[in-house]
Amino acid sequence: YQVLKFISKEFTPAKRLYEILILEKLIDTPFINIDNLRVFIQDNVASFSQESFTNALHHLSLQIFTVNAGRIEYKKLIEFDNNNVTFLASEIVKNNDFLSTHIKDLLEYNKIIYAKKFSKNKVQGLALYQKYSKKDIAHLLNQDYTNGGVNLAGYRVFNDKALLFMTFDESKKFTQFDNKFIGDNIFTYFSKKNKSTADILEKGLIENKYTSFVFARVDKSDDYYFLGLINKCIDAQNFYEPIKMVKFTFELHQNLPIEIWHYFKNIYKNKKIIF
Image 1 (cartoon, rainbow, N blue to C red):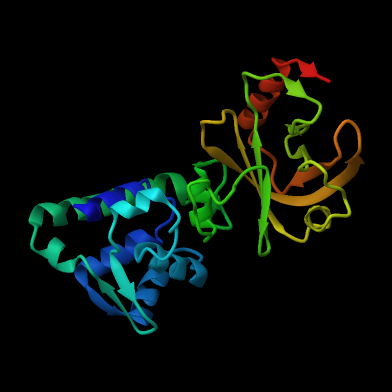
Image 2 (tube, rainbow, N blue to C red):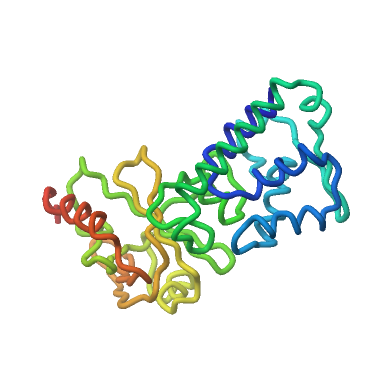
């Protein structure tokens, strides 16, 4: 029953459909030409991405997320090459009606959940204002994952993408170096220590060289809300005392929904500032 465990832990609830649809097709057709499988996915996924299709194949064949202790519990579900894809659990599933029924039910459940929660308001493969774990974010942006969440904290750049993370901890007082929304689409954001506007990564953020994704949570144990993409950097100032760092002011592409903006304002209102 490792097949069920794999699907339950890695793809449930489904934040995208690639893996779900690949498995659905392979249950009916355990050996399939990779181009035919690609066409099937293209017909059933809005805004098809070849990168995500390939990443899903790597995911199902355990060629990604390899530095993850939980992965030792699984066996790969598929093998593939440039021509064909093979469902390795085909015989087990075919000869066990109970297992087959549960897998099909689980795949159908994931399609329903995706349609209800994660199929609307999509921006670069993520649904606006939905919650994602660090692992989800790495998965959906086709990055490898480690137990540390590919070091997803603060801000990180890979290829042409930048990820900016914020935590608004309701139990702590603000300091002058905390990130903060100052309008429904404007927020201040502080760099890592010992950085300046002349550093390569920080300069790239200022010059809008990246597609920059913004995530926020209100507790360190919670998942992140996806708040959208940065439209532009409005301002960037170097700080030298008491800590060398950069204060950015960013503008989002879209205004926050009024309920989220009011929620952030209430958090700020109930906190004192420490200088």
